[in-house]
Image (cartoon, rainbow, N blue to C red; front, side, top):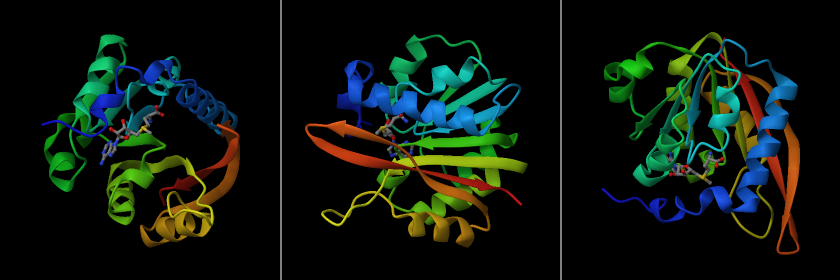
Length: 193
Ligand SMILES: C[S@@+](CC[C@H](N)C(=O)[O-])C[C@H]1O[C@@H](n2cnc3c(N)ncnc32)[C@H](O)[C@@H]1O
């Protein structure tokens, strides 16, 4: 089944804005935590710009995305400790997919949560997938007054609390300038309890 993100897959890794976003997300992640030995879920992995950086240090990365073409580009990178899944994350998938039955030490979601129709439901699924002391980290555009895309810090905090995740921090991790406009990126971090 085709997906609206499929058409972006071929040129994704040559888009300097998304390359820079992944570089900044990785930098902020490694400033926060060590990755050595961790089992990581990269939700909305795209072509794996962040996956490939994390995989150099983590024990294993499961990379999931609903776009088959994005996953094709990632698979072509043949990363030895990365396994990919092209499906919608759901209770059914968590119960039945062997790659998801074992828990995760870290779940990351870079520039994807704002595209998912039900953020709260997604956080509840992440809570199910996290190991006891596991961590969830997301990066998303900060919502501004002009449009209704992205998140405010309050939306993220409330989402974590409603999913019974412990709010660690919600910060302005970095900003990106493109076409003369600068946008802030929020980094939300929550722990399983
Ligand atoms: C802006 S891109 C970010 C890709 C990647 N995280 C990166 O940093 O380059 C958003 C990605 O989220 C994926 N996506 C959108 N909705 C999704 C969903 N419900 N489940 C999993 N992936 C989804 C898209 O297919 C796309 O690859």
